[in-house]
Length: 417
Image (cartoon, rainbow, N blue to C red; front, side, top):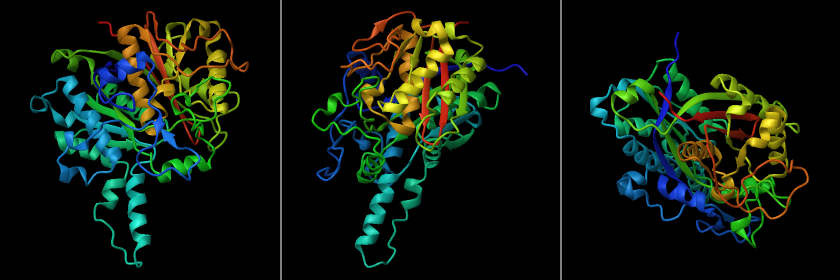
């Protein structure tokens, strides 16, 4: 069976550094930090008092007020980014076979704010379970693809993927496979997350996973810096529309890039810590390259997982050096989490968008907030510190790794006939 080719024809982003694709990309290249003191709840007694929150987001720009109240923020974010992506792709669903248009979405945690609010209301009462009838539909992870399919009348494959911070990359890989196996023509894929609340920040604080650099939030996300002290929580969504090549050409769609490979692996090591030698990270990149039919010399840019944790950054870069060998020193590497923070289940989609735009525009976004070199990192690696770098980007690889040892990578390359 001949596999179909899969291309990217629409993008949407709702991030801490931009609520649209143009704004997000512009601020990535400018090296803007999205981190600031948390405004959504009182952080006085919390170890971490800052995060990468969305700015100036109003769900009523996309939803009726009554409808918005029925949706957890992680669903609102997904609908907003998908609205941009669908318009960007130029779809007229009335002229398409919507039985072959699907939605596959990734989220790590889902409606944690809804759960927190309902339980707070319950325990403040007399024990009578006065539960909002929208409680379950608001919080369950799979409700996002449900809402998107209902909004646009899409009857193709429809489900959610959950693999912690690798969730939306796994969603993309599933979408890629459904299309190239001719089980769908178009799939709306992506991820969303909304964990900046007492439960989310308190929970990650309890794990000692978050930076506590409260005196200087804007520089707290410091991937590959000697003084990195944990990740910075982010929120938002990214949508990537994947389409079968001939279907896209037939309707005259613009094509950003071609998705040519996806890889998956497990660390099989620890529930939260990466494999110390990066074996899972090496394997997932190996699998992605094999799937794409590419070699290490074909990759020009890696958007790394790069969370700014002490163990994670070392593990990932060790895997890159071990796999790529001398080709590692020809790469540009960058962590856009230095600007957006860590969007957890949405990270894969948002960072894949950065990789796609790097391929399209031949420019690599930077890693910001580097102050002190860490001797544990190979000094010959190009981490693209401080400023973007113009270069030919024939193909870009995007890594995402999740608690539980879940690893997923995707590769995008320039589209050619």
